Length: 286
Image (cartoon, rainbow, N blue to C red; front, side):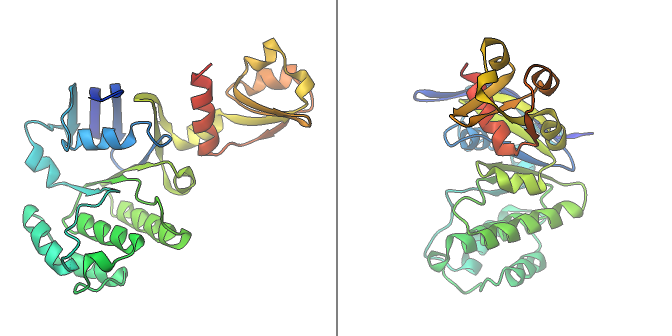
């Protein structure tokens, strides 16, 4: 499977925070979730690979092209939706579009009009009158109206109500159904990725923790619940993290066979992405 984006040994420092040798790749045809708690380095990574901030070192390729040598050509082929907004608030939707559209050689006015209709957006409306959800829909309409082959989104569902989030996820699924596309979706709301992600990349404190297919990852880990009296120096080592009460314990493990052998009568459950993310963070602190 071809890589639509490849990042190698990316380093970037911001005061007391830094990205450290960040490396990952995005396969074509996948929705890839980029997960981590707030402050883990998701936005810094996205802004750095998009050349919105300078990297200290590292190599970035989109579609097999070096970002430094082919920045304009690459950006013509990607759509970007950022959480912090980048619109002139006093302009109308149509006026803002007229500024952005000329930057793309494949801009399709009919696609843009179709997206506005689908999202119930009035092109004459001022941007500063839009709700957060409507602004996100508008940003998505702009990102998808120039035949983008890769859509990069930074926390697109943050602060949105469940209905708007559901509509956004449906849009991403429709976009991927057209074939030959990719989505790189940064979020700390992991329940959204439970529904649509194919691949997951986790970052914590500026370091990549894992990159794995979602289904493989969910099959690899298990939540275990049992009697706290069976936790000891030997059995605790089998868990990434545990929580304990007077009524029992709950832990996440990659060693379910050993847990079942050493601890009787445990309850075993399939984890969520959030369970794996938080367990990995706690496990890394041991």
